[in-house]
Image 1 (spheres, one colour):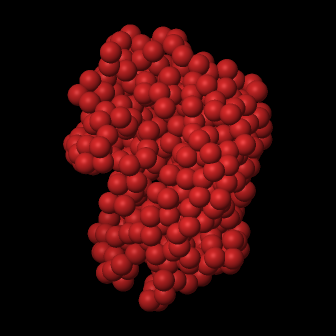
Image 2: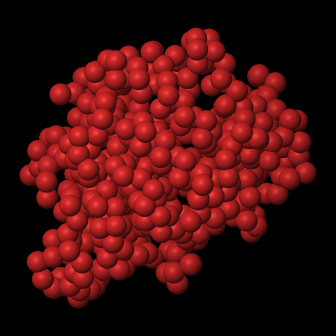
Length: 424
């Protein structure tokens, strides 16, 4: 049976979430996490995903307070949520670059046990020196070697979870001698998620992942990604349907198409506050621009050749080269359209295009995606917490059920059951 799988990614940072909106809940309060997790469970979601940050972001040497500054440890938070939920999967984003395999494998196995088989691990890597300073590593690994370490890390964790005896590794990237200290959970081991879109990331997913997040939520892009990933799965000796593909995306619902489109425009504008627009341009100018009016013209001073501020997180690789040429293009665009700083940043900032329409329209489109096997579902990034989540559960889920592409009840008790994955 064709079935759409849904997760929700609670990021905590970034411009997509309107956490300063008066209707937004406290983004780090346990009551908010409980409400979100229980609402998702009421909506029969497969999983609740927590983002993870190993260092608070900064801008020009100060805490970047335009994001939520500081997030609870994901495993700790999800362990608490295991006690107030019964079925929904609980997925922790955890870093394979700066954690230790035996330690992280044990903590994830603990989450899997206390949740009775509902845990997942979103495997991420980090190679920037800014984060590495917290772990006395600095810029420890070249970009592609981080996936090599992640692969060795995951292989060691899977052996520990299998509980077949001592596990030993002695490479330049992973060294350990350890024995599992816990029994297997009802689902065998935590479900493995992976989101890298580079060739190294796709190969890591094809070798080890149970679920992948892609950045391709448009139909043709999603089809091309699925074809590529399935070919890689076969090349690694796996079945083409052994991995669930859940692109990250956003949803804006309205009572009419016009209402939904207007809400989408409002959200995009609200996501680009004045201070955030200034901070965005500072990454490119390499200078303090706090004296400029975000509703005024672009800075009249020349940018420097300095590198982008690495403490602000990552931008698309293409944005890290040709900086001066890009700024020149922006100046031409701003002059042509009479854009202010905020107007320009709203226009050029990379965003998830997402799905905009009535609940029925979005349900029709999602049904087409999943029936054509372009995706297996979606991992939603909410703009307003809890409002965006409540709307999806109360308005969109019933439309999906009416179309026969979404469950009407949980049929199993583990995350692996929910995702229709084979046993391990």
